[in-house]
Image (tube, rainbow, N blue to C red; front, top):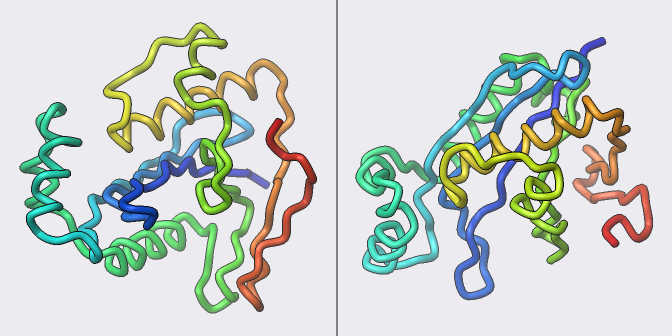
Length: 183
């Protein structure tokens, strides 16, 4: 059975509230370590004012030259989530009818932003592994690709990936499987 690893990049913080501006996912096959597919959408925030959105997007994405693309393509989070669900269902990793449980897949992120914990960071991991960054740091899809490269390298070096948390499909509660997950 193939195991695939979608790599997510966290959203942006706005006055203590998470506003997701970008929803990038890179899928790799954990056995062959090959790239499988990617999913990328820009997300239009719901809490920020239109003026604050324009200022923030210009500041964040203007330096990459993708601010116009963001404005032209950003859609509400619920639409992005529906497209993502369709995407993972297309890859046969998930079925809404089965309560949303993943099938032969796990998500890897660079820390757990919901719990305000964070690993040492993508740049530190890449530096430790002597890997050059590809693309632009803080552009979500590029960060997801770089995190996937770190995972590929760790797997090639013999690292054993373990699931650290599982969401209970019946209740939505998260069960953490290890104490002291991040040191």
